Image: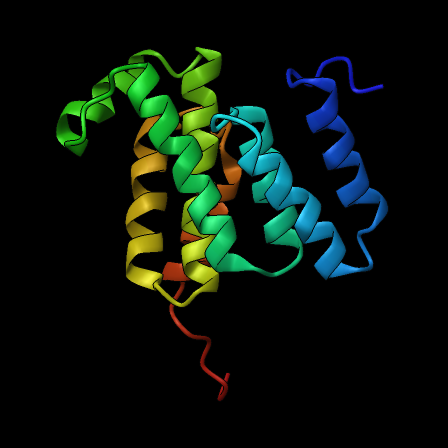
Length: 157
């Protein structure tokens, strides 16, 4: 079961228990937190945790785990901090699986920031993703940007 998931069996079991106990948030979150504490920031576990927290509407934790994914990839790929230096690297390597995951996590952080009310930061992230995403592969970012920048509809029309 979940042979594609690159984590030890005991961690897989914790994630399965979290899913099996979805309706009991306290119990399922306990299993997610155990999985997180027992791994050394495994990308697979962080992505699972992001999804868990996002769908449980725990946006602060979803943002935290998305940022951990971003930072782990940034460290492992030696990516620069400065956007002007980072953007061409991301653009040229956007087909690499780690860079795609970075871009997905970055786009996810924009979505969560919008949900948390940080509209300007969410717009900035979506605009940056759009600079790289010429083939609209990360459509969620451009859709979110459209929503965030659309002028309010005139109710008199």
